[in-house]
Image (cartoon, rainbow, N blue to C red; front, side, top):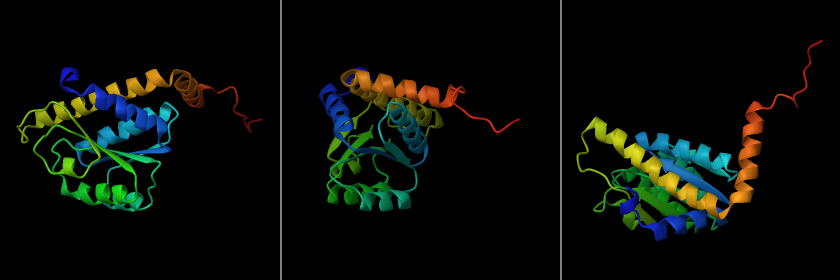
Amino acid sequence: VRESLNLDLIKKVAQLIATSKNVYFYGLGTSGYTAELAMFTLFRMGKESSAFTDSHAMNMRSSFMKNTDLVIILSDSGNSTDLIKPIATAKANDATTVLITSRINSILPSYADITIYTSGKDNIYSSIYRFESNLIQIYTLKIIFAEYERSNKDYILDSVNKSISSVTDLNNISSNKK
């Protein structure tokens, strides 16, 4: 997979993450699970992020976007028509849009500012392929996040430590028990 990715685009998306005020992940179906995982990963790194897995919520969120926002759209097929309006609305509000898909000949790339193509198989009916597709999306995001982390080490290290402490440190909790 790594060999098939455009590393210049990976670096560009990592830079967009660093300079954007908010990062939003959009995904439908199984890509929605990947969007949520990406949101938690980036949030843990200290970056404001949200995930949307419902097209109506995506439309509403996109209508309030600004030029400081970044939308990363996950669509294995690249043909989910429910994603067209949220992408177009985000762009109309000057947000930057990045699509991650495995299909070169699909409709969504024409709507996104940047498209990262992953390797994938053409058998859209195989349930095993769907699982593989999600793993490829996750790995692609891992590479993007690793590049983002490489460029922002100190900030991210502090954020990760705060994130870990927030769920593990019980020393700062006051108790009302007597």
